[in-house]
Image 1: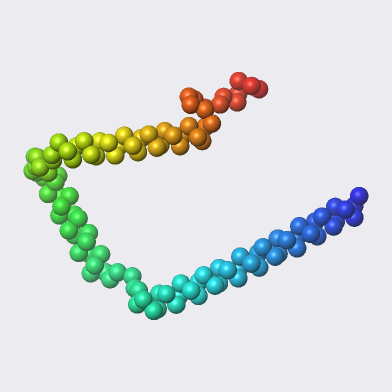
Image 2 (image 1 turned 120 degrees about the vertical axis):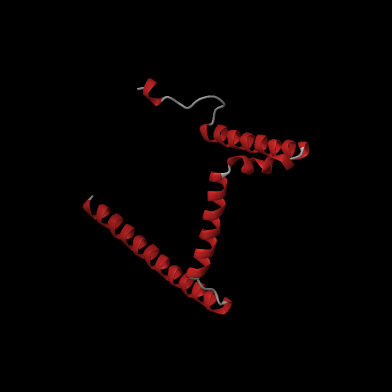
Length: 119
């Protein structure tokens, strides 16, 4: 009995070591490929000036909307009936797909299973 448990533990440890070695190897390969792509493409993080310009512009737009809320509603004056119908249908489709996912996840059309009632 003890030898069977010992052999099971040994095989489990060897499989765990094998998976750990594979994951370390593939993570190193992914890191090297990422490094080569980074260098060949000349990628670099954005500079501080880029961050400042983007967030300064965003702050000015937000401040303008807060100080003049009636002017911000002018955006909706140019909306056509076809745009409203199109975006409304997109919203209905998204809500339907979400509901379908919920039904598939619960495996029933209405409600979740109440496990406390069975106990």
